[in-house]
Structures are given as C-alpha cells and as structure tokens.
Amino acid sequence: RTPVAMYTSTDRLVDIGINKSNSPWSKGDMSILRDFYRANISNLFTEVSFSQDTVITINHRNFAVFEFVSTISDDNQTFGSGRTSIRKYSLIGYTSYGGEVWLFNFSAPAQDWQDWQGTAKSILQSIELK
Image (cartoon, rainbow, N blue to C red; front, side, top):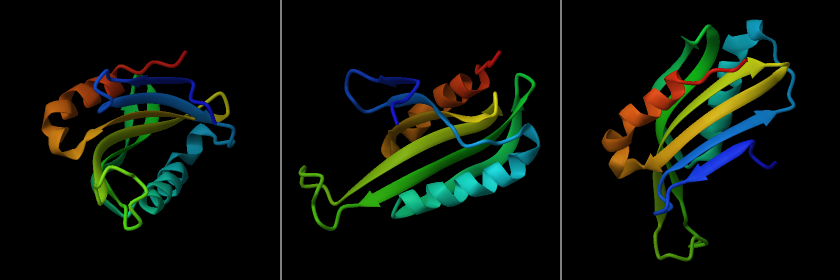
C-alpha cells in the first residue's frame, strides 16, 4: 500500500513515514492493538530488541508506541551489497483515528540511534490529528 507520506533523507539513511490501515479499530481497543502490532513487528525481522513498548497519550490521543532496534539477516545475499544483515533503529506510533489505524514511523541506522532518538521522540510528540 502506498504511504500517506514518506520522507527519506538525501543520504538515504533516515526514513519518516505516515501510513494508515483500513483495519477497523476503536479507541477502546488500544491494548489489543498494541499486542497485535508488537507481534507483527516481531515477525517482520530476524531479531528485535524493544526498548519501549507502551501506550502513551500524545495531544489527547492514545498511541501504542514501540521503540526498538531490529536486524534483518540476509543469508541468501539478496541485498546485493555484500552485507549479511541490516540493523535499524525505529520508533513507531500507532493510533486509531476515523475508524482506521494510523502509523507514524521513524527509522535510522542502528549505529546512529543515539544521534536520532531525541529527534524521533520530538517528531512523535508533535503529532496532531484533527
């Protein structure tokens, strides 16, 4: 599915994305939504180390928030770059809005997570859906 919005830095290392799902979720299902997306995130990667997995309120709206470092192993060398794995730092927020799930994603190279963590959290805290 095409994202609602996507930004990639000029060096192609940092991504910021907004997307929505047609899956119906109500505001009251936030703990179920959190469990569902945690399982999905865990299945997308070879390895995931969560540093945050919680529900927080941002501008009067509940978000399931996941902060983690993920690894995708490339045993078959399909990346074509000679690398055997890719490690990323991610901060993702999910919320229910208009009967749909909206997600806000920030990702950067794992080795640079300390450089980007403050920026990622500031971006997440600035989200306003009206």
